[in-house]
Each structure stands twice: as structure tokens, then as C-alpha cells.
Image 1 (cartoon, rainbow, N blue to C red):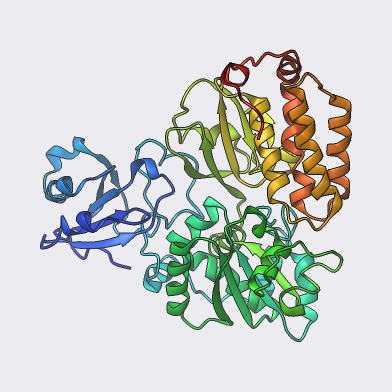
Image 2: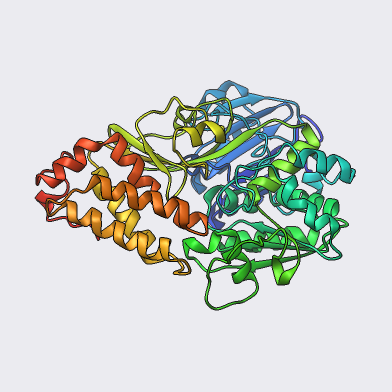
Length: 490
């Protein structure tokens, strides 16, 4: 990793998903070292330029090509430090020293520690942070007894990993799949700290004796970054392939991900049992975990086990943000990283088919979220007072009806019937009992998480906003956004 070698050296980091050529040209010829690092997870402050000299770094948010030369010059002028956020730190720190800039000081930065600070595809940076250390397979398996899968694309979503690893440990051939499809947090990790993900995947592959690692993503830029990192990975224990997937939301479901990786044209959920842990990629036992899970494993092997969750806050906010919060912290903590565009009304917690709640004082630990009938995908979508909850739910349900794979009847027919029942509310027919029963059947009978979760937004919204559903049946929209605008659920 590049560190200033003396108090006179100046190191400039440019943090952005895709730094502009103009910004880089702005410091061309300057007496400093310039490196590109990945996104911090906070697009609102990016491009973020950090200027390090000795034990001091100044941070400059939304930096323009015209400003960057001035900011580099300010590294020599401590009297003008009030022009930026300033952090004093160990000059050889390998973890982002979060400044007091809006959002960046929210939560913790363990898994996100290298985001915005290390060069994504340079193994020296990761090694300086303690990466690539030799770890016994027994230690990896021990962590797998504690660590839970993260995200609906993880075959062990909210469950301990170890039970899904045992068949692979006993097999002659096995594979590891990094399912990083379609989730902002997983894409951030592949783009900013791909070695964390790859190291976790290598550790798992070594522990179970797998000879193949496949990284699966629908994001082209992330695919390019992780592919370069894989080529630079020192002494991998397995071959690594990066495979692009279709953009459809359903393609993140673990067995549909396997179908896509194998090149099947029709992407459907596989019947289970057996699951991927027994018969996965090309029939071999396969570990299917998200990038978040593997990165958490890598950091835990290096720094010790401590549960934290990546949470992306989106929806009616000025700019979305991805934060890392301890499991003992609440949803409200994550909201400190964003500006809400309007008056808060509710949040959809847990991804595309998360639960609707007006309460934010709920821990982000998976058991707590599940007990509150909320999702654990790691996404919080803000809904403001000017948004209609009934329309919001109707659109989610229609999405489920349009996008399901069609493999099982409860999901295929259930989502269509649910969309029709929600549409009927606008005609004055609100059958709350019928809706609740349909959602119950979908939850109990669908073969994969898509169908099981598709009814949750409706179920939780009816519990939290019963009066709004009844009002629509009476021809009124409390938010004023449906009937007055000739709105119809589509």
C-alpha cells in the first residue's frame, strides 16, 4: 500500500465509482502521488478527494476539476484547514479514517473499512491491511458455525453457514459461488474492496476442498474490477471465473443464479430438495453466499468475529447511501446517513419485498427484524407522506406478478391474484380476509424466497395502514396521489 514516506510527501486519493478523466487531469504534474480508490458507499459526497500529508488528511466532498489543484496546495497550509474536514490518524492506517462529513461518520467501518481508501485491484493494499494471511481450515469452519448468510441471494440467508458446508466437505468435487447479483451493497464490495470478497471465498473453498470459485454479478463495472482483482490474487486455492447474469431481479435467487451461471436460457427456480449444498453447480455440492457474507467472513478471520450489517437507504431521499451498522443498532441509525425528501411516513425494510413499518427503533439483527415481520435483505426504502401506500404496494405486487419465473403455482398465480385484489380496492371491493389468506398460502407453499416474500409488503402495509386501504375502497386517497390524478395500479 502506498503511504507518505515523509511529512513532505502528499498522497491524493480520489474516491468515486467512476472518477472523471477531468478530475485526474486536474492534478497532472502536481508534486504529489495520485491514486484512484473505490466508492465510500456515500455518492452524496463523491467525488471525494482526500489529501494526506504525514498524520493528517483533509477531505473535500463533491470535488471539481477546478478545485482539486487548490486542495492539493492546501496540504501545505494548516492555517486553512477549516476549508475541509480534517482527520488526524496513523500515517500507515489501512482503514478509511471517517471524517465528520455528512453520512461518512454513520455506523462503523469494518467490512467497509477499505472502501474509499485502498486501491481496489492492488493486492499490496489488501495485504497491508492484514489480508492474504494463512488461516487454518478449522478456524474457517469455526467461524462458519457463528456467521449467518446475508441477503436473499444467499442460500443460508439468516442461517449459520456450516450446515450447508458439510456435504461439500465430504464430496470429491465442490464449488463456491459468490452471488453478488442486483444488490447495491454487494456491488459496492466488488467494486471497492474485491479482495475482501475473494479472500472470504478462497477461505471457504479451502475449508470445504472446492476447486472452483464463480463470482456472479449483473454489474459490468463491478465484473471488470473483480476480474482484475482475481487475476492479481496471490496463490488462490481455486480457479476464479467472473460470470455476468441477466438484469432481472429474480436472477439473484440462489438456484436461479446457478441456472444463469450454467447458461440456461430459461431462468427458473430449482425444485428442492436437494438444495445447492447437495446438488448445485453442474451437480456438485456448491456453497452459494453473497459478497456481503464472504467479506464478513474475511474480516472476521482477520479482526475477530463481530456482527455488523450493511444497510442501503434509498427511496424518497436526496441521495442513497450504504452504511455498516452493528446488529445492536437500530434502523434509525442508518437513516442518519441520508436526507429525507419530505416528511417521513414509513419504510419498506428488507429489500424488494420487505415489510412496511412506521417504527424505526428496531435492531437490524435478523431475528429482531424477522419478529417484526420485516425483511433482512439490507435495504431500507423511505416512503414520505406524499406517497400513497396502497399504490406503493400495488406496484410491488404487479412487479412480482410480472417478474416471477412461473415455476410454481402459488407464486405464479398468487402474485397475479394479489395484484387483481389490490386493483379491486379502487373499485370499492376491499376483501381484507381474502387478501390475508392468499398471502398466507403464497408464503407457505411457494418453492423459493421470491414467492414466499412477495406478499409481505401487502401483509405488513395492511397492518400498519389499514385505514388507507379502507379509504381507497371509499374512493379517497389520503395522500392525494391516486384518484385526483386518475391513478390506477399497474
